[in-house]
Amino acid sequence: MPGTFRDDEAKRAAEKRERNRRWREANADYVREQSRAWKEAHPERVREMNRRWREEHLDRARQQNRDSARRTAVRKRREAEVRRKARERAKRWREEHPDRVRSYQRRWAEDNRDKVREYYNRYYATHRDEVSERAAARRDTDPDRTRRATREWAERNKDRRAELQRSRRSNPEIYQAELEANAAARRLKRRLARAGLPPRQLHRTTAAERRANEREAAAYFGDPTLNEHLRQFTVFAETLTEHMLEHGASMREFAEAYASRRARIGLPPVDVERVVYARAVEVVSNRVRRVDLLTRRDVAAAVRSTKAAVRQEERRRQYNRLARAVVDHVKVNRARLINDAELENRARLHYGKKPMSRESLVVQLALQEVLPLVPTSRLTERDTNAVARAAVVTIDAEWHLRAVATQVALTPREPRAASTPRSSPPSLATR
Image 1 (cartoon, rainbow, N blue to C red):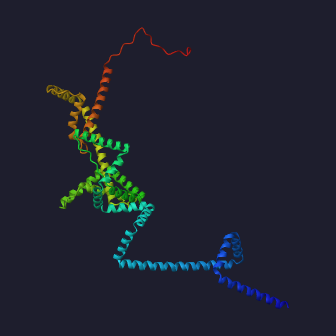
Image 2 (image 1 turned 120 degrees about the vertical axis):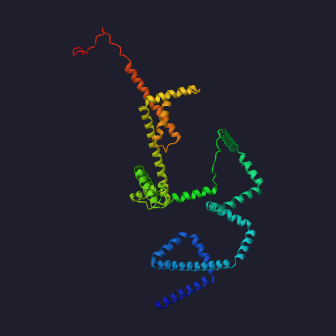
C-alpha cells in the first residue's frame, strides 16, 4: 500500500535521526573536533551557508542576535557587580588591617626585586613625563629636605661625583668652554675692582623657583579671559594717563583743597598724591566702558604706569622750559653776560686756571640766574648739564650767524667798471 510504505519510510528516517543524535551526544568531542576541522578547511562554504541561512531566516537571525546581546549585557553586569563587591571587600580588609598589608607588600617586594624593578622600568618608560612631574612637585613641596638629601648623597658618593666630573671634562670642547667662562668672570671681577665698582650681583634661581614661575605664567597666559583682561587694562591705563596729563593741575588743586579742608576741621592729614590718583581712578572708571575684569593689582599697576608717564612728561616740559629760558635770558642780557664772562676768564687766568670759551661761560652764568626762576623739581644734574650743552650749541650758532651777517653788511661792494657795457637782452630778430 502506498500510504503504508510512506509511513514506514518516515519511521525509518526518524529512527535514523535519533540514532545519529544519540551517537553525536555519545561522541561530542569527536563531533566537535571534526566540525571545527571541516570549517577550517572550507571557510568559503561556511560563509556561504551562513549567508544563505541568514537570508532565508532573517527574522530568526535578528532575534538570535538580540538574545545574544541581551545575555552578554546581563553577564557583563553580573561580572562587574562581582568585581565591585570583591574590590569593596578587599578595600575594607586593607583599611582594617593596614599593618598586615604593609608587611605583605614589603615581603613581596623583597622576594621579587627583579619584578619590582621590571615593573618600575616599564611604567617609567611609558609614563616618563608624569613621573618627572610628580618627582619635581615632591621636591618643590619641601626644598630644605631636597637640599639636605642632595648634600648627603654628595657626601656618600664622592668617588661617583669625581667620576662624573672627569667624564664631563673629558670632552675638550666642554672643558675649554668652562675655562673660558671662568677666565671671563675673573677678568670682569678685576675690572670692576679697579674701577671701584661693586662686584656683579646675580640672583640665582633654583629649579623649584623656575618651575613655580613657569606654573604661574602658564596659569596666567592660559586664562581664557586673558585677551579681554589685557584689553581692559590697556584701555584703563591709557585713559588714566591721558586724564592726568590733561587735568593733572586741576586734580591736584582739588586734592590740596580737600586736604586743607580736613586740616581746618581737625581731621587726620591725608596724602595729596593718593587723593589725586584716587579721584582720577574714580573718574576714569566711570568713563571706561568695561572694567569688570580688573583687580586691585591691575588698578595699582595702572596708577604706577600713569605716575611714571606723568613724571616723564613733567620732566620733558621742565627741560624744554629751562632750555628756552636760558636762551631767552642770554638774548636779553647778552652784553652784560659777555662782560661777566670776560671778567671770569681774567680771574681764572689770574689764579692759574685754564680759560673757558665765552659761550660756555655765558651759558653757565645765565643758567645760574635762571634756575631759581623756573621749576626744576623733576630735573637731575645730568639734565641740567644737557640743557647747558644744548644752549651752548644754540647760542654759538646764533652768534656765528650774526657775525657772518654783520660782516656781510659792513663789507663794501666793488664798483662796476665803466667801460663794461651792460648787456642787453637779445632782440627777437636774433633769437
